[in-house]
Image (cartoon, rainbow, N blue to C red):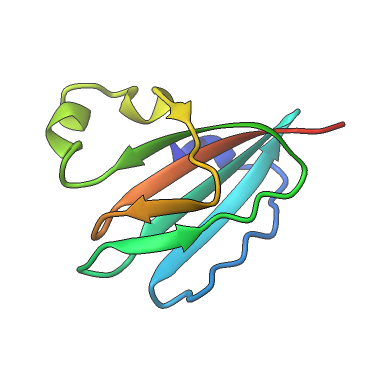
Length: 103
């Protein structure tokens, strides 16, 4: 989870609206970790501008996946391909995006 970023070099991740979406990130070798959190009670469409992208994977924690996540401590480590362009993040949902950076 986010605790794995402790002591790692941070990266600038800009949110279109920090009152609605919080973002943070860090570098771990060739990988960039980006976390997004929807702070609202409604779903949001978040446009993803991912420069230097080689490959990306993503895990999402939201109301629909909460029950599965409570049974699996590694839930957010099980990632699927990141959608291109935009991410639909449900109310109070969290996304972990893992990018392989180009050299």
